[in-house]
Image (cartoon, rainbow, N blue to C red):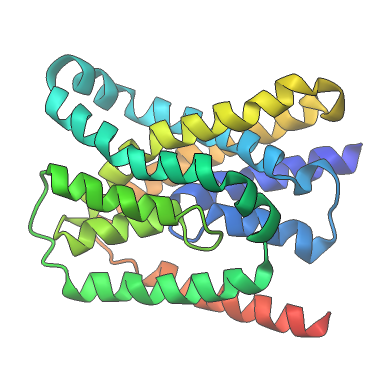
Amino acid sequence: MENDFFRAIILGIVQGLTEFLPVSSTAHLILFPWFFGWRGQVDTLAFDVALHGGTLLALLVCFYRDWVHLFLNDRRMLAYILAGIVPAGAAGILLNKHIESTLRNPLLIIFTLIGFGVLMVMAERLSRKSRECVSMSDSLFVGVAQAIALVPGVSRSGITITAGLFKDLTRESAARFSFLLSTPVVAGAVLLEGRKLVASPEVYHFDIILTGIIASFVSGYLAIRFLLGFLKRHPLHVFVYYRFALAAIIGVWWLRQ
């Protein structure tokens, strides 16, 4: 049981950091149990989504002023966000079971880490980074990109920030919009999977789950603050290098099995 608490803390920290840094939280939550041979509750989609509850709380704490402003003073931007969440929401509902059963594969993650890393480099080179205001077309474009993030290794923040750059948004504006757009989608996923936790409480150790949620909240809050400051001054390249290195490590580890 003590090992389970330790693993929940580690995975909570990993989730909080990698949910917002463009390196794919889902990939890391799959890879850590695979690397270390962890089994049981911490190696399930339900536990992964529970950890997303912690990062959802981090989003709400960091951007609650933005949401208050949207509801009271900027209904147009609120409409853009609602339109942008439709593709990811629909994909999540339709493909959830398929993703859980077939896409949690380390070999797939190698290709998505590299492929979407290359896409991030292209966005950095081609984007003019001249715009801060988001339009409806921007929201729909980024929303479709967010749907692709259901595939492990893509990274929700990575693909949505990249999509924003391709629309010539500044890095900081793309990141902020990415986080706002992801909030309702993450909330929906947490509610969808949370029904399993409520329906079968005897299957889960809620003290372990709560430990992971707290860890993911703290690390997620710190990751958001870090990334918004980082992108004011630096490109995405350091995260691309990390993605390539992680893909190489996975490949070596796979060959040793």
